[in-house]
Length: 270
Image (cartoon, rainbow, N blue to C red):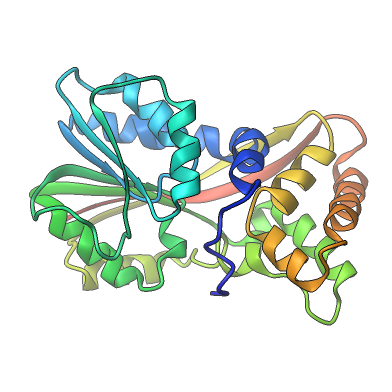
């Protein structure tokens, strides 16, 4: 993982929430929130909450007396998430490292993480830490993206960026968000962390936008791909976004665009 892969700062949180969340995250967030709700938890920990799309989906479904801790490593993302959430006395917001959670053992019924474990520098350690703060019968629920070739907008944008920087292609999307998709590896690492009952389901959905520029902006300017582009040439962000827009339009049409997105949803118990 590059040093820039975990930096969600500056204008990235706003672009992320405005463009990327409705494009690819909302449906998976609603799915994950319902799975957690079906477990009837009272104490919930959200890890790597990002801009709060799962928080917004899950909070209305929880019981009145629930205790919901929402965390993220990036304070900028957490601050943005708080501005989008209706005031709720059940929710506590806290900056936290997934590998060193500031909570006592057996503090939560469920730990939830939407598309965040790919960013853990040590996933087994992150899983062990989640297991530590869960009750003995608690559950870890999370999702990850499948490989980039079956997540078509991300794939097209990555290829477009490579056209602009052929000698040093920006590979953030393939390397990190779409770099942890091997189901057998995921299960093996969960078992190494002490989880024994593991369910993995693959979900395929449609990603839709009113025009080709929306996914181009979403990925080029609302993710750490932006950091990679600006490292190579600070003046080329708009150019890469334009090239990506044209590539998406060439493949999916000039009007509203639709593409395939696919991810894995995992529920693990000790």
